[in-house]
Length: 589
Image 1: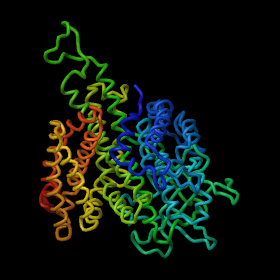
Image 2 (image 1 turned 30 degrees about the vertical axis):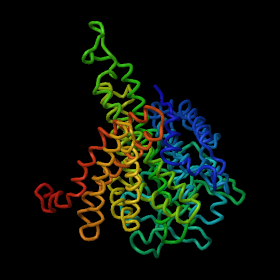
Image 3 (image 1 turned 30 degrees about the horizontal axis):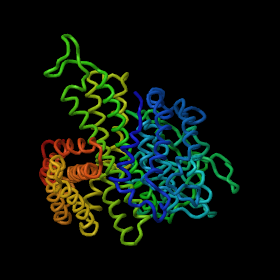
Image 4 (image 1 turned 90 degrees about the horizontal axis):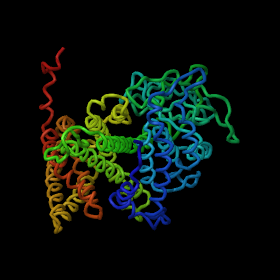
């Protein structure tokens, strides 16, 4: 079975549950309608299902390769990328000033779900380019925008993000790459970067690297980091490609998954030094890079949704076809076996996969709609409130959704039984590919720290409390209905929100006086927040939708997932002593 984008469910979640419909008909989206959104998604679904999905298994088996002429991607990737560019998919949400279509970020996020569900190794390339476009649009000098944005937006050129170095993982204080000003507006970049996704490839004629480096007189730590644009090929005044820059891939990582995506070791300046241009201000590179990273964090969360959807479809199809055993009370003739989907435990696992996938999708789409609202709101107050909501939800979207991607892919292997452990069925690839998601673009532990120490205190806690109040309204709407199923969903959501309220009170009360206590519970707190938010969005879908499936999924989530909220309350508020003392015998020696 190949992947088929669930366009109707995706469009419903985007428009009505996440709230994109509320932005249509005015401002920058005056010409946007639900029908247009669905038609765009239907067209993209054809590319995802017919062109990209068939590359998933073959790309995994073949992998990317480094030769004397650089990196080559698996067979079919370059042709698929050409079709992706011809379809204009890279330009959806980009500014019309440089050839973009000016459509909502939320729609682009939904399309990224399709590309990554079909073939995550392929979908990674557009994600990095989209981040580069965001950073250059926000912080680039006019001449850099004019020279690079049109080609990046069209997809003719691709972008990368170069942060990590061999001695510097998540701690950017340890960066050593150097940038020396040349007196003509350019800089000579030297250093080594690792884990650079699509740092080299043969799908596009040029690659635009965004590289963090230090100036000779830069302050120590993250305050002394600057951001530079370093193209693979230099670009002439007329826009044509010139000489090869001194930036090369010198190695490819051997990875657990995403084999079709080249993860490069990049060397800058092995000869005379790579030529680069400053983006933003000197020593302010981290602020510029965070523009790119925040975009990437949401899109990585969307990858979690994507891999979960693909794993669910794969497992569902297998469960319908695989015959094994006889369910209790079966009236099958003697000796005949039933499809395993008829067994209650298989149904439980499938519903767990589906409900977690739908919940994480709604969280990611709602985050994207908040980003759109921050740009398209009809007043300054509304734009500010939307930006605060996006800031709050981004670490939840990244962390919760990527954890879900791994968990759902693992359940998919379980449904396949022993055959799930065998590569032939394809179930194992989803789990292998998914495992990187909680790690890159800021580990999920870092997302939890970000949520507790930076996002939760926004507005003295009012931003989080406002969202919790909104979720309470959803619970109240469900409980006040005359529908027994909705009443039960509302009651379960209210109960989960009680736990979230208590954990939030604890975090806000102790963050300054006992920061380690809060950090010890940050990851369970984020999971608690995401669990409640998922229940809120699924309940909203059940309240607003006519389809029985929305009610069934929300009901299952309320009965089987939301009760974990109270289990998470304990570890979220247990404090640092629950993690043992520093001189514990467990950690000694």
